Image 1 (tube, rainbow, N blue to C red):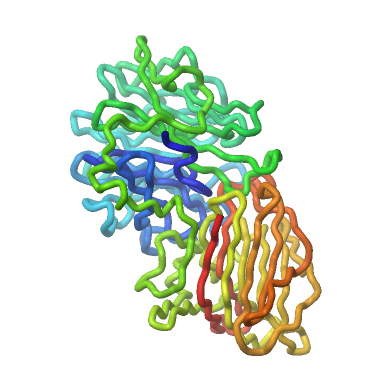
Image 2 (spheres, helix red, strand yellow):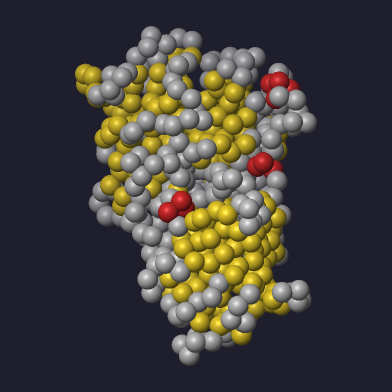
Amino acid sequence: MIQNPILKGFCPDPSIIRAGEDYYIATSTFEWWPGVRLFHSRDLKNWEQIPSPLRRKSQLDMTGNPPSGGIWAPCLSYDGKRFYLVYTDVKSKKGMFYNTHNYVVTAEDIYGEWSEPVYLNSIGFDPSLFHDVDGRKYLVNMLFKFKGILVQEVDPNTFAPIGEQKMVYQGSGLRCTEGPHMYHIGDWYYIIVAEGGTGYEHCVTMARARSIWGPFETAPENPILTSDREDPLALQKCGHADIVETQAGEWYLVHLASRPVGGHKWCTLGRETAIQRMAWDEDGWLRLAGGGNYARSEAEEPRREAGALLGKDKWPKEEDKGFQDDFTGEALSVRYSSPRCSYEEFTELRPREGILRIRGQEYMNSNHHVSLLAVRQQSIICTAETCVEFEPESFLQMAGLSYMYDSLNFFLFGKTLTDDGKSVLTLIRCDRGADEAVTEPIALPEKGCVFLRAQVYEEGTLVRFFYRIGEGDWKQAGESYSTEILTDEYCRGFTGAHFGLYVHDMVRMGKCAEFQYFSVKA
């Protein structure tokens, strides 16, 4: 069986394709760099993260983007020759209209360099590109303020619009119609959309028509997928889906889902990706295999085990492991992210020494240039740890471990100076932009490394911080603190909690700290 979620911790809005024997999923990254996460599998069960497609500033410049702005709901597609990625860069998400700019990039090799972006429009978010069986291509857009789904034929080479744009579907009536994906299966054009809003009433709706231009009729037993909100152990917020056919003609649906922690309606891991086995009913509608419409915690594997092509003992299961980096590799892991700007701008890897140098920039609450190298939290209960060597020269400099959600909600646990020049360890908590030191300064030696640890426990609802000097014992700093401030619900955001290595230098933005390792273990 396939256990859900298949992509754990902040992997929302999945878009899935099959190219021969290979499956690929793209997920949203919002303000996190690089843009769009890609994952590869041969069996729909074991997934490995691969290089992101948006790795150049010319493709994506998120400097100044607000929290939970940036990349929303990418659409990955394949026409048998080229890979296509349509994505939205959200520059603002308040006021009468959002600034949502839509682009497309392409690549012949999904692991290679992707093209420069082609601008499409700014009329809404979550667009997708549909490749019809006759070779024509169509842009499928939601219209801002959830006014419905538009279809526009585009030039297959330039993506310039061809002919008239037409409203083809206005939803099933469950509100917030978004995330459209179009399919031509048999004699029907099917459209799948997310509805209900991306919270606990989220769901997946299906409609069909004989022509791409409609009229589309809604499936009689919609939604085809939603959540059992009465069961606290069930997957929640299930919606925003895409479907794929296996080589053996089986159908699967990937969708967004969340796992609330500790019996509370808060999700430190944000929105994740789950999978469901599907079947076509006698009337030509797609339904959950086995009936019903509640997302399940596990799904039956495909009959054809394509993963055997690699040898199951050799299949990479990176996503199922904890994270450990001793900085001896030639390049940083693809699992790292940084807010808004490339971490290559402020990191220097020294593999022979087993050291990562990070140059300090702005304080964490900036939406511009923050030196944070992070990995998403993937286990509800876990421990993050590092060792840092840092010799601050001002109280405006700090280096250490971060546990954070966005630029307004975070913990910083690191070494700095007092006003009178003494080396200390401090713990800062920022709650919706109001930050304060929550512990008294802890005296540290001026030189040498300090070990730092963040431990999430009590069903994921509490975090406590520890430090160790040299070979000494671990000591707790401060008290236990609620993780609620790092959740979608509290922050009103769309991402998830991260652990990271952090440095700021508000003197000259040039002071470096050296980190000896970084681990996050369940």
